[in-house]
Every structure is written in C-alpha cells, then in structure tokens.
Amino acid sequence: MELTAVVTGAARGIGRDVVTRLVTAGYRVVAVDISPTVADLADEGRVLPLTADVAADGTPGAAVGRAVAEFGRLDLLVNNAARFLRRPILETSDEDFDALFAVNVRPAFRITRAALPHLTETGGCVVNVASISGLVGIANQSVYAMTKGAIVQLTRQLAIEYARRGVRVNAVAPGAVDTEFMAEARAADPDPAASLAVTLGNHPIGRMSTPDEVARAVVFLASPESGGITGTILSVDGGYVAR
Image (cartoon, rainbow, N blue to C red):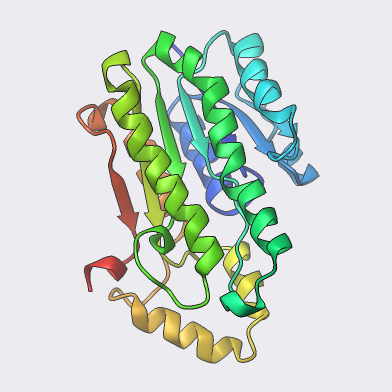
C-alpha cells in the first residue's frame, strides 16, 4: 500500500527535504508552495507540485482534494509553510502581526481541518513544524513566537481530540537550521557575523541543524516506529532548550 502526504512550504529548506525523505520512504506527495520553483520537485507518479499561497481561501481544498483525487487517499499532512520576523515589539505594526498569523497559523488550522476527515479514514498523521520560539522566550521574536506557540497548542489540542479516532498529531520544534530562510533573516542583521556567533553559542552542539535532520524527525513522527507518540513536541535544536 502506497501512502500519500501533503507538505506545505515544500519548495526549499526543511519542506524540500521532507518531500525528498517521504518519497524515499515510499510516499506519494502533493508539494505545496507559493514559489513556482516547487515545480522543480515534480516526479511523475511520486510528487505533484501545487503552486499556491497557503493563505489563499482555496488552497486547503485544492491541496487535500488533489491528494485524494490523484492518489485516492491521504495519510499525512505536514504543515511547514511559515514566515519569520525578528523585530522588537515596539517596532512591530498591526500589519506585521496580521501578516504573520495569516501565513503561520491560519493556513495550518484550515488545511488540517480539511485533511482530518481523510486522515480519520486512513488512521493517518499530522506533523506540524513549530519552533523553539514557541517553547522558550527569545528576544525580538514576540509575534513569530506567538505564531509558533499557537502551532504547539494546535498540536496538543488536536492530539487529544483525535486520539480515539486513530489520528496522531505531533510537531517538531527546530532551533536554528542552516537554510536560505535563516540566511535571509541573518542578512538583515546589522552585524550578520556577530549574530551568527551568538546563534551558534546558544546551541550546545555548536552548529545549526541541517534541513535533513529536521526532515528525518518529521518522517519518524509519521512512521509506525512512533506509533505510541501523539501530542509530542520533538525539539531538533542541538540542545537549545535543554540549557
């Protein structure tokens, strides 16, 4: 039996490596991203790219509908799409707040809501990509941290609500990950080299995680090997929250 997944934020970074790992594990994947470069992931019969804004009203139905229409089932949803914002709260506008929640929280809620009836049928899983910012306080990340805290709580609440319906819901909480996403954020710092040194110093292993390390954690949480795990937030953070 071939399993089917929907992965958002799939064009690069963690999402791209999640797609690659899932295909290796035997999944067929609908890969969703606002960037047209998601088309590069196309693999006939294995990966169907969907260029779409996760914040658009039609995307949840389109993503889930395509998986069911093309592959006949849905076994896994990976909510990965997100934006980052590092800014002191006094410099953060209402528009910043609304824009971040519109990408980081509302789509995860809406796509999960669309997926759950199908996941209930297959005994499937949801794996959310949260962040250590949703678990601990980090300066100048007030709104981003709020969005990731919301993802943490969505994970826990749905794990309880759907445990007896056979659906497991977990999350990974990455620390700093060596992605373009992180590089772009760091480039906006006044002193990128000093910022990098602080980041590495805060991670006991002395380096950032790789996207593939996070992807492997996602695939583990979706696999039968984690069959007894639901409602868990798995930190992939080089020891950051253990300090």
